[in-house]
Amino acid sequence: MGRGKIVIERIDNSTSRQVTFSKRRSGLLKKARELAILCDAEVGVIIFSSTGKLYEFSSTSMKSIIDRYTKAKEAHHQLLNPGSEIKFWQREAATLRQQLQDLQENHRKLMGEELYGLNVKDLQRLENQLEMSLRGVRMKKEQILTAEIQELTRKGNLIHQQNVELYKKVKYIEQENMELNRKAYGAKDHIAANTTGFLPFGFTISTQLQSPIQLQLSPPAVQDMETQTRANKSR
Image (cartoon, rainbow, N blue to C red; front, side, top):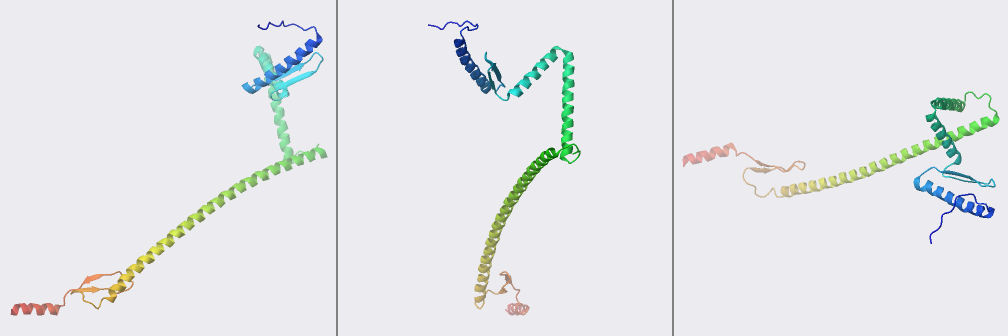
């Protein structure tokens, strides 16, 4: 059997009215919370019971929601009334000028200027603010210096590793050169030891230790060529 419609009118019975208020209030606040979470909406709910008790829910800050609501209402009225729009922007300009003056005055005080009219408590507050600012600047400076030192250390380790690799390559090349020299000079010594043996006519071998092995063809002696020519003619 379906549920019948409830007549929307004031409940006369105080007990039933309080029970209904409690149930509907909890449901309304729950729906407001779900709306704020699901839809990323800025929601504010204010409820006063018949006894004057306050119940509220705000997704951010109730004050910021009320301020936003007030500005939105003013903007809406300004669209309907051009004269009020001019007044609104005049108030906004005056507010911005006042904020600028306050910032400039605060800046001068932080720079140690125009300190007249400040009592000991104000000066102590200003000193604490400066110390906190100085602490923040020093922390930022230490962070930057630490990061630079770490980067330089990393680069130094990388360069050291490259130097070690280059040193290994140089030592390997030196060992190869020594091995080649040993083989080359060993071959020269072996040839020099056999120079007393037979060599073809006109061939000589250089035995200098610091020079490469060279084979040279020497021209025949002039006297031997003449003797050979005469022998051929006599025949």
